[in-house]
Image (cartoon, rainbow, N blue to C red; front, side, top):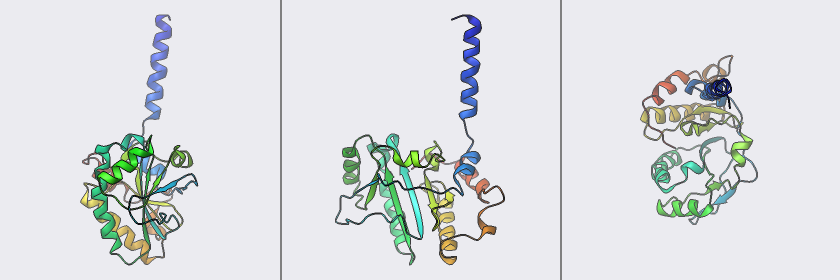
Length: 214
C-alpha cells in the first residue's frame, strides 16, 4: 500500500469514527418519542415462585435492557439496587410494570446471576438480540438503556436512576403525571416540535457527573 493510499485510509477511518459518534443530547433525541417494540422471541425466565410474564401491555412501563456486555456477575450486582426501586413502585396504586430484558451469551449466566443476587422477579431473556434489532433507535451507550414508556409504548424519559437520586425523583414525578393523564403526558409537558423531551438538558447535565450504571 502506497503512502498516499495509507493517508486516504486514515481519513476514511477518521470520518467513520466522527460520524458514528453521538453526543448524549443526540442519543436522547433519537429515542425519546420513539415507540419501543417487544419482539415475540423474548423468553420469560424466573427463579422464584412467580411464574407470571412481564406485562408489556401495562399502562406504564419502566424498561431496563442489559446486553451481553452487561450480563457478567459484576454488572448484575446492580439488580439488588433495582429491587429497591421495584418495591417502591409496587407501593404506588397504579398500573406500572418493570420490564427487565437480558441478552447474555448464555442463559446459564443469567440464571446464575439471578440466583446469586436473589432477584426473583420474572425477566425476559433475549437469546438472539431480537430486542436491539426491533429497536434500532436504541443508543449504544448503556446509560440510555433504561427508559419510561407511556401506554402506547412511546419513550417519555430515558436514563438510569441507579446512583442518581435526582433522576429517580424525575422518574417518580413523570410517573405521577402519566397516572393523572391516563398513561400519556400532555403535549405541553412532553415534546417540542422536534419531539425532544423538554427536560433533556437537565438529564444530560445530570449524566455528565454520573458513572455508567444499568
